[in-house]
Image (tube, rainbow, N blue to C red):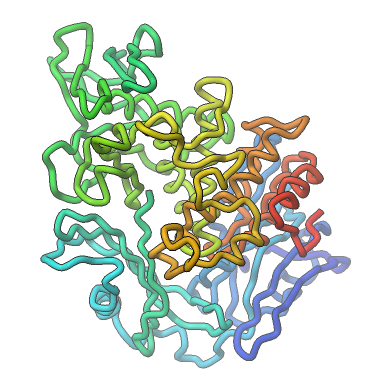
Length: 530
C-alpha cells in the first residue's frame, strides 16, 4: 500500500539521523532513527527530503517472537521500485509507526521520460540472452524457461541511477544448468551487471543415511516419513514438502513435477534407491525438508518459502552430480562421485539450499562480492541451526556427513582450516588470487570465492551462538530477522552487521554480544547502531 494511503507520518519532534553520500548523481541515505512516529506531523518523505514522485509500499509485515510487529516498506519513484532501497518501521498495537531504519535514495533523474523505458521487456530479454558472457554458458543448443523480468530503478556503484530491467531464467545447455541474472539499462541497452544466481499424511518407513553416518530406519530410529496415499500408491509428498526423483532426466525441473511414488504394499515402506554409498537419498531428502520447514515455523513463526518445498534428488546433470543447488524454485541434489562425496542429501546441505530460497525471498542478497559471502554464510548458519533443531547439538562442520575421504566442506569455528576461507574482513580485502588461484571465484573475477568469503559471517555466527546467554536458536533467529528486514540486495558486510545489531535490539537481545561477535572478525558498524 502506498504511503500516501497509509498515512505514514512523523511527529513534529521527530529527530532523524541520516548519512548522505554526496555524489554527483543519486544520493543514498542511510536512515537510522528511533524516535516515535505517529499519524501527525510531517510526512516521512518530506523529512527525508526525498524527490517529488517518491512513494512507499508495504512489502512485508512480520510479528516477531516477542509479538513486536515490523513492517518493511519499499521505495518507489514514479511507481517504479528502487532496487535495494527499503525501510523497516516498527508498528505498535494502535497501528502507529515508531522507528525507521534502512536506505533511501534521492536526487534521482527528474526527466519526465526517465521512468518510461525506451526498449520493451522482450528486447531486454534478447539483450540479456545475447549478452551473457561465456562464464555463464557453454557451447551448444540451450533450453530456457520463461524469463522473470521486472522493471526497477537501479543505482550502480558510482551512484548513477538507471531505469533497468532485472532478468533471470533457468538455462539447460549441454546438460549444464545455470540461472543467469542480468541488469539491462532500459534506455541505452547496456548490460550493467551479470551473475549466475544458481545456488546452491500416511507415515512412511524405509532406510536412510550413508556409509559414513551409518544406516538408520525411518519409523524406528527416526520419525516416520510424512507421505500421502492415493489408491495403491504412496507419494513422497506432505503438507510442506514434495520430493521428486530426477534419475535419468535431463530437463529443467519444474515445481509441478510429480512427487516420487511407490507401491504401498509393505507397511508404506520405500527402499528406492541405493546410490553411491547412500541407502535412500530420496527418503532423507523428504524427511530433511519437513525438519527444516518445522524449524522455521517453530523458531520464527513463518515458512522458509511461500510455497511447498520441492526436493529434486538424483539430479546428475551439471552442476551435479557433485553439487546441491537452489534454482529459484526448487532444491536439487546430485549423487556425488566415486572418490570424494556421497549423495549431497545431508541435513545441513538441505537446509543450506532451502535457505538460499529464504534469502532470495527476503533480502535477495546478490550472489557475488560481499553480499554473496553473506548469502552463502546465512545458508551455512541454517545448516547448523537445522542440526541443532533435529539433534540438540552442533558439530560446526558444514557438510561433514556427505564427504568420503576428508573433513567437512567448511569449518564454522575455524574457517581457515579448509585452506581458502577467511575469518576476518581484512583478510578478504587483502586476498591475492595469484597466491591462492584455486580460492578465487569465477563469479567474482579473481576475488575470493563467495563460499570462502562466507567464513567471516560463519565465524561471527559461531561466536554469537556460543556466547554465554546465547545459543544456536537465538543466534539464528537474530540473523534471520536481519535477513528479512535489514539486509539489502547489495549489502556490504559492515552494513549487514548493523542489520544484525538492529535485529537483536528488536528482539530485546543483548546487542553488545552481537557487536563483540562481529568485532572478532574485523567488522564494526560505523552507523553506531549500538
